[in-house]
Length: 321
Figure (cartoon, rainbow, N blue to C red):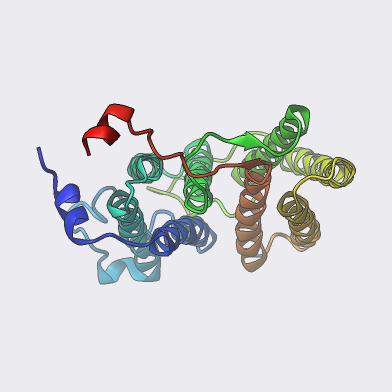
């Protein structure tokens, strides 16, 4: 049975460059949606649209009475459609490429379903009056989307053969430990946000937005401790990769992560001691996304994927050809 995508593949066979650009566009939009989601919270527009999936009980779009907060919240919702379009382009490019990159298509569909599930989670966040736990889960899910989008982009630059390690397995496992620690650092940041400043809106029905009932300063200290651990671990990985002569790309990516972590650390301390101004928090969120992406790229540089070998042609078929 022919499908619309297979019919399109008969008429359009994008090059590998187009597939990589489509995957990169999806990755860029996944980062953008994290930043704009942070802007919604930092401008106290989290309840700019009072319900979900509509903006109000009677209107899909914001009304003039809702002011700028309604516009900001609604704009962020509309950007989800732009993100979905970018992912759709990536899926179709992978499907129509010759040969069909089935692994890339699966990663594209994984992004699509992550966007749909996160949209529902965002609706629950609004309906629960910006419950800090659902807000944190909303951001973690967005980081998961960045992960899958990054993987698709990196895989679009490789073949579909079996991965071959360029270093010993313990070195690869060390890179996994680094990714795990960075993930914990990002997760701790969501808890700091949930317990501290910028709840996202003044409140709903006269009630203040709930916060995580933990001491803000203690959570900030835990977050800082994880940042120090991350920096120390990155320094160790730099020396280990140099000692084992890891691939140049892997060593370069660790150095990039080190620079990003230092910049994030300085920014984090500045915003903490300046009462977390909105602009610095927004930049810090962008930095957290870039740090996460930089960490994820390190294990991917420790293995090689070549093109799958062409299927062998039976000798009998050659004789009858």
